[in-house]
Length: 414
Ligand code: IPM
Ligand code: MN
Image (cartoon, rainbow, N blue to C red):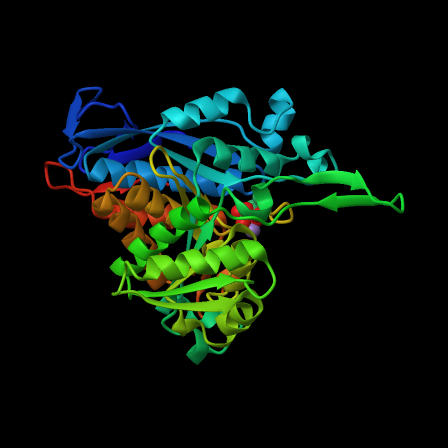
């Protein structure tokens, strides 16, 4: 977890620590500094689950951004770090300790890094890091997974596709998360009549499962450009046939939303060939998993993709789409923007604190405008930096807007 965020007031040169729970007035030695922007009104507790690998590099940056943006909007955010994934297996022998789930449930939002580590790859399923994530999703009943894919104008050069193909892409994959083939029963291993081993999972969706996720997608489509494309394999799969029937039925409740249906194979092709046609892509857990990694090709890096997993009530999970990236871990090469943009989603969708969300989003744009790029999005003419430096630049951008009551600019100490 990130340590104290140290700021100092340039007129006094006295360092003060800014952390949640700190009172409005800071006292250090004989100097009293009042930060005008720091007037805590609302309190939120955030469960922080960095998990494995680069999760530990990008999440502290997201926490710092949340803390600073929150303080600027008078929010008092408290953070508690909890283990999940391989880290939890190392610590207590299970991928999702009871305490992590309990505290996550009590929190206002969960900020998650990544789960998965090679050491644990070959273990039985109940001892795999990703099982912890699936258990957390089930425990918090977060059935809708929102994965926005946007091509920022500053990053148009980072895509390997044609610029004119990806220019202006702003779509959101809305993926069902707690049903379908990942979760449905029966599943398991058995032996067939030839004595062979057989592994099987069930691709099934019930009408309420489809209705719940479709409702979320229609509501979000209404607030966006009003185009919803439902993706399935209704030509073959019964779960998909029901999916299409329920989505079609719900469409009559939303005359303002233009609905289309695509089979997953065609959708995959269209997503790359003509991505600007999409606004909302509504799909199931498995197709959504594949399409969202495929969609990462559009902006050019999975290191840019945030996500939110939401239920009807209770805390959501906010996490970068990239995984633990063992190859990048410890090299300071990870892109923290997906985690920072997940913090934006946490504020926007989880806490409904749009102003604080906007502050972080603007800071991301500012850093990109100033030309900073991690390795995955680096192009000639831009400044190649590591994960930490990118984080510092985001904080500097946020911090540039902090004014102490005496009018002096409060600057970040790097
Ligand atoms: C994702 C991941 C997860 C998923 C794994 C880690 C369980 O790939 O969030 O996309 O498939 O949902
Ligand atoms: Mn995935």
